[in-house]
Length: 337
Image (cartoon, rainbow, N blue to C red):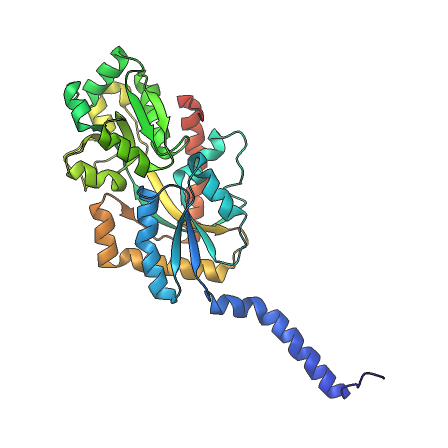
């Protein structure tokens, strides 16, 4: 039996309609995005600043887009595990990364075989916030060792090499590198103990199992305010408005620490090839959220400086950070454990 043929005009119309649908498909998909939950991968354990910032913007994005933005903690290897997951994910807008200065500024200089390319495998969306780190000690340990400031710390650490241990959120993170830079500039030595995020490290700090940490300020603020941790100095170039009485490392450390600065930043990225329409829509909604009084006041009170900048400006920051931290890694002699 022969297949019935459509009249020529009808066949042409059908062909044109099919072509139009095919061409409109990606645009239509972008316009309707999201039609299901979106995952924000946090490459560290719960409780740290990366996690705090992701959970600050996720509910705002859920409200703006009418779909759940779910935080998914995938810790390991200084953020590399979570970053690789996103780098290998489909570029359809349903998997995003809360990247850090570690995953996208430090790790390429620190790890000989990084499982992703921080430039080629991602498209920047927006910088969420920048934060200083804070050099802090367990309060009881500081009291027992009569360490009241950075000068006291350096004196003790140099006289007792290896007796102090230094907690971090993982090898190669900004928290680790801030400590390594401090060690190299002061000639002091501390035993590095990497954790799978700030949250677990802070638990050991509060519990007295770790002595010192150069943590991101937002994740430590509650413990500092609660008197569990003693803030010796902030690692930024200027004092933090959230802790105005705490000096900078450069202020407190004297000539040996002149020029010391090791701040952190956190921002959203998507797999390379994610449609620009999706990238721009997410950036716009994050910027709105960060400018809302409720979110902005909450983050500022914790020591964060909200941003929400453009994808292009975020890309420039990432490029600049590669250059900066490669020099820090080389100068400090830092290595992954």
